Image (cartoon, rainbow, N blue to C red):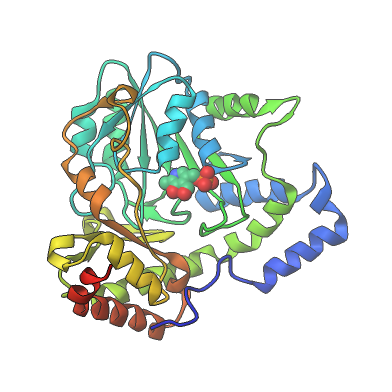
Length: 371
Ligand SMILES: Cc1ncc(COP(=O)(O)O)c(C=O)c1O
């Protein structure tokens, strides 16, 4: 259906070429210090409406910095969804703490508030809440719950810079918010991340952790230079992606066993679509997830399996079970994600995706018989 395959990313914006040329002209491409990192921190502070921004080498490192700034260590528990980015689980181990895994919501496979409530224990010090695959977490209720229990919140907005939930920017709600500028992300510098907070104490502690004579895992001047023009276009592109997902939702309506993640309208949300998440019911669709993804790839569509459940294939000694994980099991088996670049294309591209999915569904019996 799409013989040229998925569109490339990052996009080849002339503003990025100009930023690279500028960094070449003034030599900041190879210097420790220059104007770009300071400027990016300033722009992020303005854009997010947050007091402190610390740039760093990756979103994963930003999560580790957040845990360290919050003083998490041996004997502490960190609660997170059993369906989440695996690096978040591993960061909890990196600081010597114990992850507590809880279930996700049925309609968007993002962390469930009821499961968080049930999973809290006497040693729980932090909750990591990730907005995943176009899903959002109701941060007003989550931060209120955390406040009552005197627990800190790390809000992982790695996948959704510019998203809004309940009237506020994603990444702005928690004690710390984190972002990623990795090579496939909505704001991309190949690698990179940011730690943001309102709290001067956390900012200072994270900064001290990062400073060991020189900065550990920093963002470079060159990376900051290419992020600045992307940040300037983020809102316009997020709006385009959001309307593309709405269109795709309509085009795919009625396909059995495949439904896009849904957020309750009452949450007043605007998602960020690094990946657009779908819930696949293999039986209802009539094909395994592996075959659907393979067939979609053959059609030139960047559809992939979601994350593996954090509780799957790991020794139960490495985490505490915070409650039943029935929805996380479903997410582990049935999450499929569409990579974002196609969401900036025209309606014809979305129609091709929908036709391809319907064609795959129509050919499910034949496909299932393939060796
Ligand atoms: C939810 C989430 N958190 C954190 C990260 C880590 O970001 P990075 O790849 O910059 O380390 C990712 C990366 O995909 C992610 O999806």
